[in-house]
Amino acid sequence: MTEKDELQLVQAARSGDAQALERLLEHYQQRIYRFSVKMCRDPEEAKDVLQETLLAMSRGVQEFRGAASLSTWLYTIARSHVIKLRRRSKFAPQREESLDGGYGEEARQLPDPARGPEDDLCSREAGEALDAAIAALPGRYREVVLLRDVEGLSTAEVAQVLGVSMDAVKSRLHRARVAVREKVAPVLGLEEDLGQRCPGPCIHVVRLLSECLEGDLAPERCAALESRLAGCESCRHRCESFRRMLSMCRSLEAPEAPGAVRAAVHREFEALRRARGHARDAGPGTTRLRVGPPAPARSRRGQPAPELAVPEAELDPAAPLLVSAEAALAGEPWV
Image 1 (cartoon, rainbow, N blue to C red):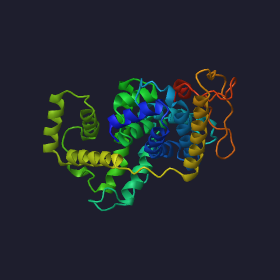
Image 2 (spheres, one colour; image 1 turned 90 degrees about the vertical axis):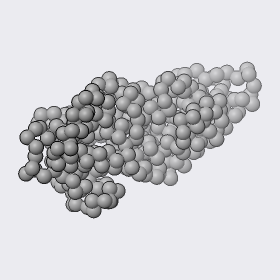
Image 3 (spheres, one colour; image 1 turned 180 degrees about the vertical axis):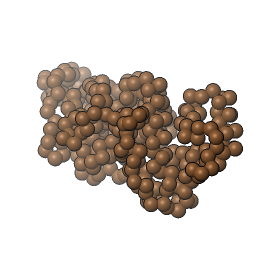
Image 4 (spheres, rainbow, N blue to C red; image 1 turned 135 degrees about the vertical axis):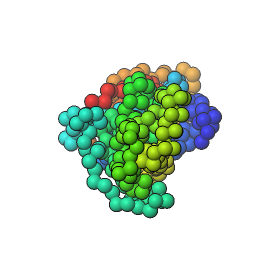
C-alpha cells in the first residue's frame, strides 16, 4: 500500500467508510502482531496487545487528525499496551539494563547458533539467531531495533512513538545493532579473522558504519571509513555481516494475526458500524456522545485488559461512538 493510498483510506475511514477502515485494519494487523510478539515475548500477551490496538483504531479513527502518520499512531498505542502488560507481569525485570559497561551481558553472551549456509540469509538457523539476539536486548533497545530496522519507521517516527529525542533513538539504535550483529555474524560465515586485524580499532567499525547509514557522520568521515574497509579484511567482514543482519531484519516475515483476535475485532467493528449507522438515521438532532470515564475492559482470557479510554454512551443510546484518538494514546515512559 502506497502512502497516497493509505492517506485516501484514512480520509475515507474518518468519513465513516466501513470498507476503508476494514482495509486499514487488514493492512496493519500483521505488522502490529509482529511488533507485539517480539516485544512481549509471550504469544498470549501479544494477542492482547494486537486486539486492543486494533480496537482502539476502530474506535478512534474518526477523530484521527493526522498530526502523526497512522503507523506512528498505531505503534504508540501498541507500545503503551506492551508497557502496561509488562508492569503487571511477575516476570518483568526489576530494572532496565544498558548496553554500556557491564550491563546488557545477556545480549552479548548468547550461545553461538549453529552455522548455516552462507548464501541462505533467510534460513531457519539465521532467523532463530536473529530472533534470539533481538529478544535478549533490554526493552529500550529492543523496541528501537524493531521499530527502525524491522518495521521500517523513520528515525523521526521512532522518536515520536517513544517520546524521546532523535539523538536518544540513534544512540540506542547504534548500540543495539552492534550487540545483535555480534551474535548473528557466526551464522553468516563472515566473522572477522581475529588473527589478521588491522592496527586500528576494528571493534568500532560497525558502530561507525551504522552512524554513516543513519546520516550521523560527515561525508568525509564516511569516505575515510570506505577507505579503511578496502584495506582491512577483518573490518570488511564485520561490516558485511552488519549489512546482512540489517537485510535480515527488513525481510522478517510478519506472522498471521490469530483468527480469534481477528474475529473479536470484526465483531466490535460491526457493532460500531451499526451504532454509527443508527445515529445517522436518527437525524441531525441526535445527541453526541459525551466523553466520560473509560469502561473496564476484559482481555480474551478473562483478565483485566490494558486500560483503554473507551467511554460508554451516557445520554442518547443512538449517539455515534466518537472516541478521541488522543484518549487511546495515554503514553507512559518505558521503565
